[in-house]
Image (cartoon, rainbow, N blue to C red; front, side, top):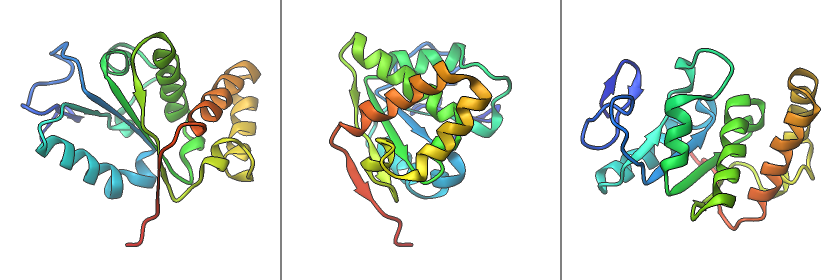
Length: 169
């Protein structure tokens, strides 16, 4: 994988900030949970297959709002692959991206292919306490309306058939 200014580069080595190319796939994930396991493996396999993938390096983000390059990458991708993990819902960035992916899917021909990595769709439906606790915290910090949008996005994606995976080392 090539890096330029801390950003993962799309296949072919073009800087994602200098090119306005469309991505075929947008990976949405919580870095500390999955970056060194499924996310990097999936990203590498897709790049080797010639698929143009956007994988953001979340620890490099500055500020509070999604903007510019990230919005463009989501809007222009054809397929969204959210990788839901134990602490996914604790990340405002993951939830912001997910809500925008759901919005884009409603407006056009986009596909969401969820991966449930060590979690179950019932966690996204808030039938367990795993994501509920994080959403209650977001409601206090980000407001009820924002937390409701994120909850609705989680519930909508939970209705999509995805892959249930567990890390067995």
